[in-house]
Amino acid sequence: MNLKAQKIIVTGASGRLGRELIPLLEAEGAIIEAPSSDICNIKESIVDTKWRKLYSFYHTPTLIIHCAAYTDVTGAETDRASAIDLNIMGTMNVAKLARYYKAKLIHISSDYVTYQPMGMYAFTKLAAEAFASPEDMVVRTSFKSRGTWGKNALTKVFHPVFTNADWVDIIAGKIVEAIKLDLTGIVNIGTERKLLKTLAQQEYPYVDTIPVQKADALVGYKYPRDCSMELTI
Ligand SMILES: NC(=O)c1ccc[n+]([C@@H]2O[C@H](COP(=O)([O-])OP(=O)(O)OC[C@H]3O[C@@H](n4cnc5c(N)ncnc54)[C@H](OP(=O)(O)O)[C@@H]3O)[C@@H](O)[C@H]2O)c1
Image: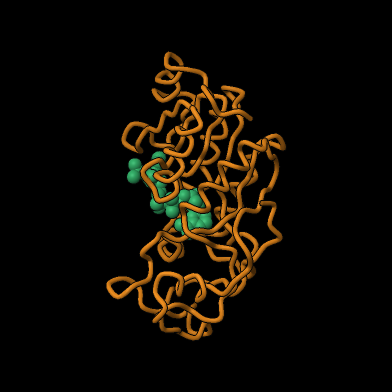
């Protein structure tokens, strides 16, 4: 798909991934509408509300890139209702909007959905995938913000943990590539399988390790030891 002049709605535009995606899409010539959660709360039934009216006069999008989510993985274990509301019901609402406009939904899922046993966050992300149609794209991926590890940031990493995660700017570029390739269905996006420690060491060579066996007790959810996937791109 040539993105030039394509009208795209991005949910979760203020988040880590949304902030990286938007300039890349604009550089391809796309026209972006990226409402904040104040204007467009995806927990509301969007098709029946002001959000639809807003877009009805603005434009008909051809793509909806759905990045908004409840991303507090630890919080999801105790505040299950919020995780379900935003990740499952919110995605259902966004998918309904996509159907209304006959737009392709690009649903950002997580590599955590591939790991067993599954915590509540992963469960809600997996359930949300069910709202995508076969012609939509479900992106299973993982990313970290640059600066996650450092002298004044995290100084430790769980070990051994295997992942295809990479820095968010790199993953955002690959998501745009997948959109341009018009991929559909479940699309696994990442870079080579590696230890999470190896990724951390790219920016902070002195990173210390915590045995992953201690992770569940420390983070409060079933911490995935190996989420590496067979990559699509
Ligand atoms: N971070 C990771 O390591 C990782 C890994 C794999 C997959 N993912 C997935 O990637 C996607 C993006 O993650 P991220 O890290 O960029 O998220 P993030 O930084 O936590 O941002 C979450 C976004 O969701 C929006 N949002 C929250 N409640 C909303 C509501 N009721 N209505 C509309 N928007 C709402 C927020 O907007 P406001 O600021 O306006 O509230 C914010 O833009 C998510 O689907 C996440 O599950 C993340």
